[in-house]
Image (cartoon, rainbow, N blue to C red; front, top):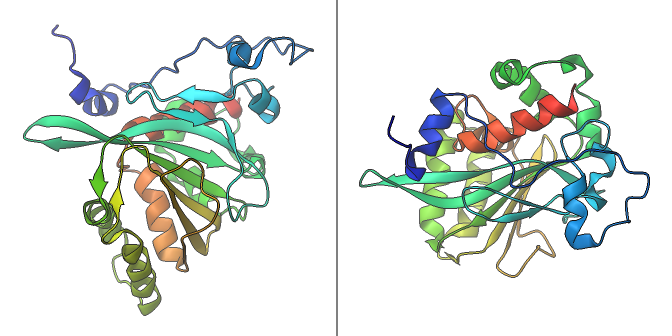
Length: 267
């Protein structure tokens, strides 16, 4: 069989139930002396998806590299508008096809408040395949009153209008009959990106403090220090969440990675 080209990894992941490998070798030994290794080596001793050490892995495993784009994600973040730090649950990448060639546009990671995971006891023991197909689990994560956030890291320059148009193409089919509140929220969302050049390395955070709203933060210089816009529409907020972890996500690799994480945590 001919090797699968890099540009077709997304399709392969969808059809062959492929789950991306993490760029480290977990050694989940639950060491009693977590600071016995220098920070540069601490990531080698912990598996962030082990249910026994998930609560404390931020000091053991500080950086995870998304395999396809090589973008690095912190395993724990404190973000504007969040009451406590959020923990990385999975990473992936978004690919667009131009003239039959797949081009990576951004890497993405899903972060959640630990209390979100505490509300998922009904799914204890589910396999990755069961989690993948169970939309009610992801609905429950969204409806949790605790914070969730998607971090997007651009891996190439994109103008703001192009980025918004791609997002809008994914959002619009998910809101069948937008209300005036939805239209206003979409207008606010659109205005953030219009006319703004988004350079390679730009961080975009979509953060849900609760199901009724979404915060947008954009930074070209590391983590954001504030919120650029507040989107007050539950329909728009849910549509964006569904774009990334719904039944037809824009990044199959991100959802597969999140599913893998949930399977391990819910053992």
